[in-house]
Length: 508
Image 1 (cartoon, rainbow, N blue to C red):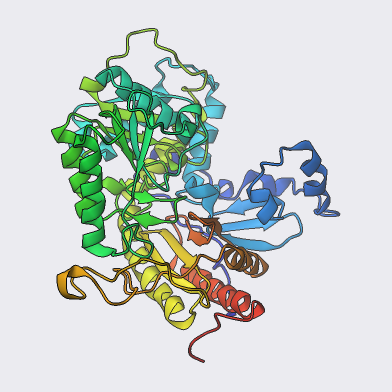
Image 2 (cartoon, rainbow, N blue to C red):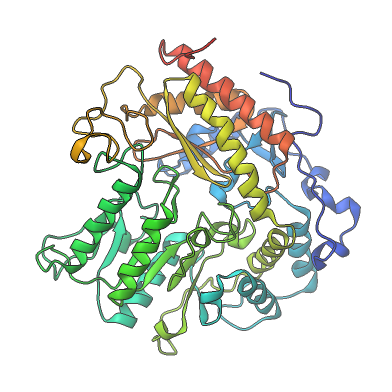
């Protein structure tokens, strides 16, 4: 593993000259305030041991990442034991600018120092007004011209529930059309199972197009076309078992489903299918928004204008905030409709305003597109060198590396790319990506994550089988830091594959 050059683990990109939040910030404030009161280091391992019996067994990250963060800046986290880590999890994508960016800290301090109330329910405030101004500057033009905003509880799941309720009220229908691998699911509506009775069906799930594990075994444009035809049939066939839904919910890039970008042509087709049938299209931009995929909003890659967008994660500048943006004609709620107790988080709105402005003024979405393309190209070498790497995929700085069992059998019943043989039936078991889909290897993926941690790199894990290593670095990551991340990840894959006695490099 190559040593990380001095400063490679720090991100000290200056704030833009035009950002008001940065002009009054003294130089001494560019470092986290916690440096003046460091956490005790005598027994850092005792903190997780004390907390474990007090918290739910449902904890996720604490099980896989046994570190105690005490300081953070940019890409870097420092643990209580003094170790430094490059954080490519970024709070599950909430940290668009990384940890404790100066413009975010200054925006929060200014609200605290002003004496403004921190929770204002849904009252109008100067902080909210500034946030909405900046938000509307970034929205897709076709939506911004006629948009309204509904603040809700501070999580993405609550934003999805709010959007679904909006669509039900506007259409008078009940159901929701979603796709396999959908990332939301912690609320009552999202957990509801579909029923065979069309009058009782609430959530119908349809195939999401992908190459490596195409549900139709063909991948590519042909696989996306088949997925679209299936959706059209369900909407139009009275015997499909699902009534016309209140809305369709789609992720432009599936995050927790395995970092799978939707084909642009397929997404445009979903837009046309829903528009023709007066079904509101809800775009889930919770993880993909604010420049993550190389456009400010991921729907912009395909030129699609949704009827509704659900936003959370990075929209609050690292603090909890969620909202729904929708076309005004869908707003049939009457005054006094049920409201949440936390739609007016002033600190999150101030941090969100600073984040949105910084991303916009510094063209960080464009930077994510350029760097993401380069990283994906370099990561393709992993798939060439290591048979245990099934596929590398993603968009912008939202990247996934799927780990597989190289000694396993290819998935049965799969054909090759359309047109590979006469009549569109291929003779091999290759997908549209040109790689045979091998069995997922969740244990190997977990081992790669642990090897990354040993090397000072924090990554996520997701996908249908928990076999996809996820990279969600902050948009402010430098070229030098990106090289360090790639070096550590490649070293971790090599070590994990070697320890398991298979999937070693195909070339020396």
